[in-house]
Length: 262
Image (tube, rainbow, N blue to C red; front, side, top):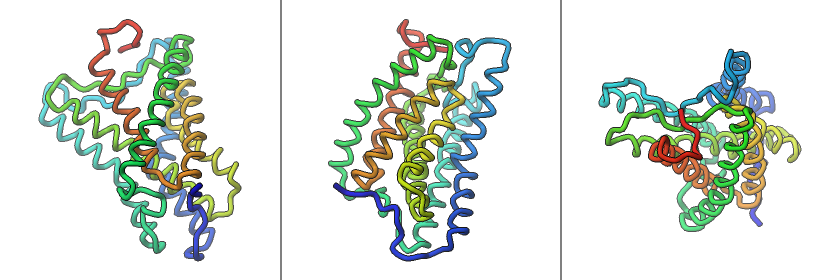
């Protein structure tokens, strides 16, 4: 069994600076997304209509009726979203390591792909069932994974968006966060709770189902990362789950009765 490297080999920075660095990275990325999701959910709860009647749209059109401008915006958003990952890369290089220390590389393509497919198959179906149950119970908003127009670049952009989400979340909330919290001396249970709750928090805009489902996913991903010592299989799994959700919704919404749509 491979254990994820969460302890530093040398003391590179005082704990105070490591903590400040971690807060800055999260404040520029998924920590800020979590706070925004909490505010969004508060707004949804206090809206005059029920949660089940409200819609959370992902991958929205940025320039309706102007497809080339819309495409430019979509590429911009995806590229901008990856900037915090570049920051994590820089911080790890400054530490004397690289993204390889968290297993974000292509050195084990076959095993990473195989593990990713298995995890995606196990989590994807249960996640869909939880969403449908929560939405039917009125505890979740209707999630519309795609609001893009029917243009030639819709599917490629949705796939790119899925991989961007996967890379940002797993590199930051899994590999980087677990490494830094380990360096700060946190216990393993506290690390798992923190990573999983953070993952759930930035999905709260979807409702209670999004929160609970992603907390559970976070626990599973933490345990698998500790076992494998690599984020790449989990990046692959996350990207496959999101790709199926984004592209599947774009192709099926309005054509099947079991899928809630905007």
